[in-house]
Length: 346
Ligand SMILES: [Fe+2]
Ligand SMILES: [Fe+2]
Image (cartoon, rainbow, N blue to C red; front, side, top):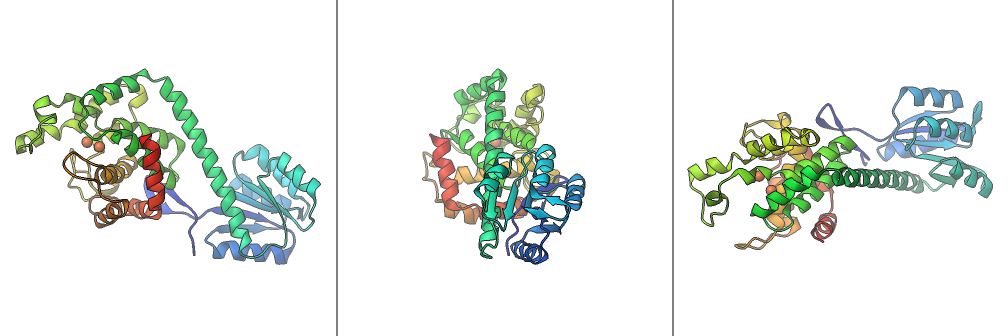
């Protein structure tokens, strides 16, 4: 059985199932669809009447509406009109026992995202839901990307800081871009809110900005650092935080800069925070940073394969990294990580 959604609740990670409102007057079809979707991991609220469906929508959050054309005391189109006004963005799928092109066209024009004719094969119903949920997720991601692009273009401060860092950055070329892309992928997989995604993106880009304040003799030293030099180096999260927290647009992201070297088991720095004391964005970032460090070539060693890095992250589950986030990280295929790496390196 699948669990089609993961979401954040009260700062912690918990599994929550996709909430489906199923509305259909015909009892056999309603029960049949509800059974199929519940078996596939969806949380289904099923009802037969237009009034009950409206009441449910005004009182509960739903992720998707699956609605028959003929309802008790109304039609699917009436519910569509109601939902379209009050719940912009929630996928609304209409079905009918009548194969009518006109009806399908009218439904799509009114804002339905899909239309199908019943009966359907049992294995087809979850696929119909999945493709509409995926489409919605892609649209949301694109909207966030556009928003980030517009906001970033307005932020000379961010650009100035990044170019200052690039003059002193000792990490491999493109590290900040790759680690930001990995962080966004993981943040997206746990359905982080758009505002948090935006914060996480800036935090990831700026994570090592405090290295600007580390003396050259330490930052650029080719040999191993002494214990005193390490102590100096470990100040870079605090230096970075102090630089960012004063800039209004970077205030939220400054927490990620401050806590990007904290560890789930409390053995990180600068404050030795434990578990969920570490902000979610910094916990996500920690996995991405390690993943990129391992898979990138360095002058003194070649990067390891994605699957080797995956095993290492699993080994550090619950030690260095948030165990729930590692589980989500592991659900994302090697090919996807490699695709992001190529895209971010371009
Ligand atoms: Fe760092
Ligand atoms: Fe880094």
